[in-house]
Length: 128
Image (cartoon, rainbow, N blue to C red; front, top):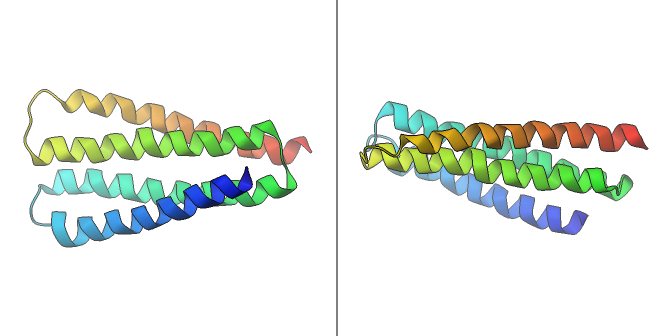
């Protein structure tokens, strides 16, 4: 499983750098500062949790437990829900689409996934 997490984390790292460059060179000046800040928060948390997933892959080699696997899965789910919802919210605000701000309600579920991932990672190394 550590190989899968390594592949996903390195791919997501490349995507994160591309999204950061996109924000800096394309979005800046074309959308509101509020929308840009939302996008940048998504990129920042995605990058933090790409490193968390990378650490999970490395830790799994020495602590190959179901809890460690859950940590990796929760980090991936968190990236999708947290960062993905913020990217979508940025698009909504940039395109000025009224009535879709409710998408922001998804973001806390991604945050809970991140917290769950960190707690699982903690449990996996304490358990052994």
